[in-house]
Image (cartoon, rainbow, N blue to C red):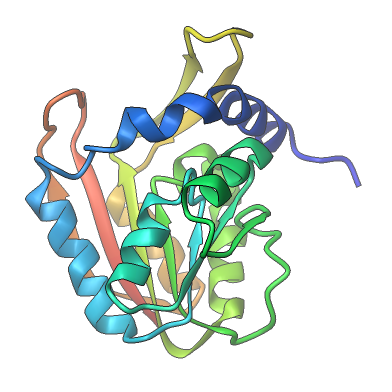
Length: 211
């Protein structure tokens, strides 16, 4: 089966920046108290897990969840990111996979964290992503999403070694909530905050529960 082009482009971009990414984002949550509170609410909801951090990057939130006594592991599309995560957190589990290709068993998880990872999926494919979240969650399991708000596709060109381009998608929170409901993931909380330092659009956060 031919791999979708958006996966190949996103993988290439993040492989290229993997050795610098952990340093770039290490203080990302310092000035974002609302982000931290949404993550804390997710931790309280999922208990001990297990939780899959899908689109884990270099593993900072996987490590955060484990520091809060949640049994969590990371999955990322980029082998380079996974290699960095394993280097930084050698005691934790990290696998290569996509949002719809994690090879997890049905009902295996107490939670799914997708923190700014759905923004690389074309909106017309999000129903498939949320159906996969529903499949891997146990009844009563929870999802936490973070994404940029809007209704457009952006072509990103990083000033890195290979000048790799890839797309990211700004998403309408209400439409995302509708797609989750269609996948039998009931939204229990939503937050939209104004742009912070270095951001150009409002940021959205959704918590949902498998029915």
